[in-house]
Image: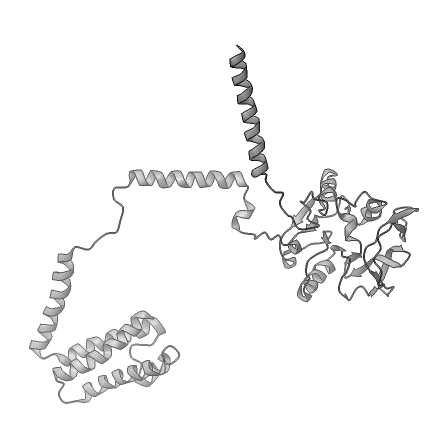
Amino acid sequence: MLKRNKLQIALAVSIVAFLLFGYVLVKPDLPDLPPYLSTSADRDGTKAVFTLLKEQGAPVKAWKQPWRSLPSGGRHKLIVIQPYTLAAKEWEEIRTWVSGGNELVLFHDAPEQLDEFSITETGEDGSNAVAITDLTGQSGTGLSGKVASAYRLKEAPGMKPLLKDERGIIAGRAEVGQGSMTLLLVPEWMRNDRILENSHFELIRPYIQTSPESGALWFDEYHHGLYEKPGLFAVYPGWLLAVLLQLSLGALLWLWMKGVRFGPAYTPREWTVRRGDETLLAAAGWYERRGLAREALAHQARYIRGLMRERWGVRLDATVTQALAAAKPHLSKEELERLAAVMRSWEAAEEAASYSPKQFEKDSRMADGVIRRLERE
């Protein structure tokens, strides 16, 4: 009995040691997600705000496409938090979108100079909490926050100040057409580890919420490196695509089982030889014995003119000048000269008193190159 218990204990200890050893060796590393990502639960992510808005019933979604693809129509809101880069063309696209009655809320601690906002540098980075004044009166009084940005907004016509600290304006709004652009110099307030510090959430809440009659609320992830390419299958649910894929595979397997033969269809050699080469040689010998070189050249000329009509719309009775003019945009200089020589040989054969098989062979070889070129067109 004791011996059996010892074996069981030894086996259990071995299993636990094996699991611990394997966990230490192959412990998966957490993915290094970009900062300010709405799906990131890291300290520098913004999943807390994104999840809160979704739980409150807001139509919040992640935007992973260029700004030129933003949905048209008014009352939409786009929240952009510390984007990597913003090109001048993108600013023109977003201004056009905002002017249609939409709203842009930009969180950026060092924005570029914009037409709607004037930026000034204070040269100081705030590391301690300071008093924040809500100039709109929406958040109450006695509020505080940490402002890490060394920039402030200048008071300018068309810009409405929203939040202010001891060094200047940290948030403002400007009307653009029928919509508005809001700039806040405190992107760190949206982070998971900062949102509940001091009065950060109370101060930014009015600018990230939507009313029931508003449209969608988008969190921009395109400028955090995430890109979603829209396509035909994007409009169908995943379960339907899976069912269609399984049905397609089943249909292919059924066809494979019911198929009589798979592979290419081969032309019998006897048909190619007897009905191809022999017929051609017989026809050529008949023309040669009868001395019908001029008639054979006429057949060749009609074939070339037929190809020109099919490719370029040249009439069968077109003159040489008209045919060459129609062919000029499609052929190189050497090819055009070769075609002109062939057509001149036709005229020479018609005007000559006699036309020898030797001359026909020479003209026919020259025409073969033109035929091969037209058949490739």
